[in-house]
Figure 1: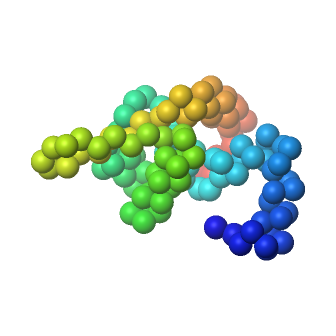
Figure 2: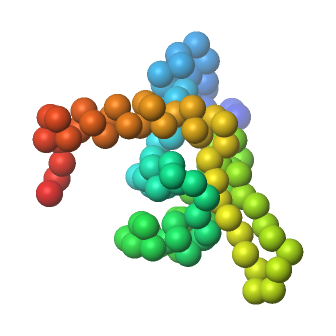
Length: 117
């Protein structure tokens, strides 16, 4: 979190205030958020399911990214009152509304051979 008095904060506000593209890119930015959304597209996953789907993500980063997505309204976390404890992650209406865009990005990347493999 940036200090409100910092120039970085002021620059971010001036860039995003009236620009839906920049605001959206900030909301989904980072290395893992889009990948998490992609893996949740077919339905709810438990924490370990998300972790198995993205084996190279660290525990700390996965927890942080899930928290960010939850706080920003893209993902909902459901805790079950069971032993052993169980938690599911699922896309919200906002997260689901982004899937057609993400599917188009995926298709575009495949069509144009945009991969690092």
